[in-house]
Amino acid sequence: MPAETRVAIDRETDIVTARQKGRELAAACGFASTDQTLIALAISELARNIVVYAQRGEIIVKSEFGERRGIEIVARDQGPGILNVALALQDGYSTAKSLGLGLPGARRVMDEFEIDSAPGRGTTVTVRKWVR
Amino acid sequence: MVPILKHGKFLIASIVSALTDQDLIQLRDELANKIGQVRAHGVIIDVTAVDVLDSFATRTLRDIARTVKLRGAKIVLVGIQPDVAFAMVQLGLSLDEVDTALDLEEGFSHLRRGEERSRHAG
Ligand SMILES: Nc1ncnc2c1ncn2[C@@H]1O[C@H](COP(=O)(O)OP(=O)(O)O)[C@@H](O)[C@H]1O
Ligand SMILES: [Mg+2]
Image 1 (cartoon, each protein chain N blue to C red):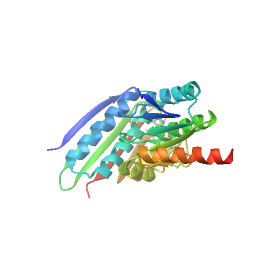
Image 2 (image 1 turned 60 degrees about the vertical axis):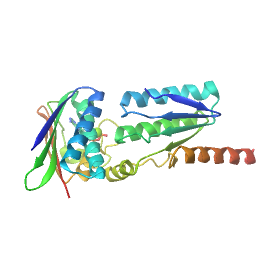
Image 3 (image 1 turned 60 degrees about the horizontal axis):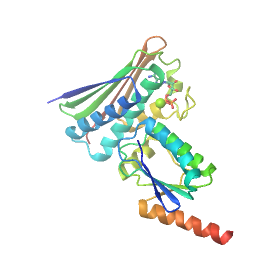
């Protein structure tokens, strides 16, 4: 049965909650522990971006049990949005003087990555990973 | 909260729960103070129980390591689990300037070797 969990993100402790929920769902979905950790790490980066740049938003974790088993994570906020998405996806680019590895890293550790963001409209990042 | 234990001239901070940002920042500040209070020569940070080290945690651990070194003590990070290490590499994270060891025991040997060397040099 497909499952879905929503975690409201508006403070740092929500980041831990979101990645724990994600790991639980990933485990139930049949991901090996290495992949569970990659998924938890991607969630951690996306949830942190919400807290740092948009103050609040939500993380939705869905597991899919159709022909392919996998997990989808949607990180959504109505914050300031990203001016230059291509730049934000480059390793080391950060407007906060942090490591600039959250978005490009989340893209690397997951199988699929989509981002929809524009100034004033907020940001939605959708990532997926399939059970191998 | 991360408890800091004293063992001879060494301080040990075992991160037992899922790490929050606040825990890390508090740990950095407490270590900086406690090194002076107890005149510690070395610090071991044990992350055996940590589920994920993300870019924020990595950056803060690097800051902690630099702070500890500036306070005149050695530092070693122990217990990074295989999955956690693999995930860090995939994301592109590194702890270059921070010494690491397999577990607490190896961490102690690492710090003691450092002590020996400085005794012979001095
Ligand atoms: N949810 C978001 N809302 C607005 N800006 C964002 C969001 N997520 C990422 N960004 C922008 O993209 C940049 C790169 O993000 P990231 O790769 O996570 O690195 P870092 O967070 O270390 O800067 C950020 O510095 C920020 O400018
Ligand atoms: Mg980030």
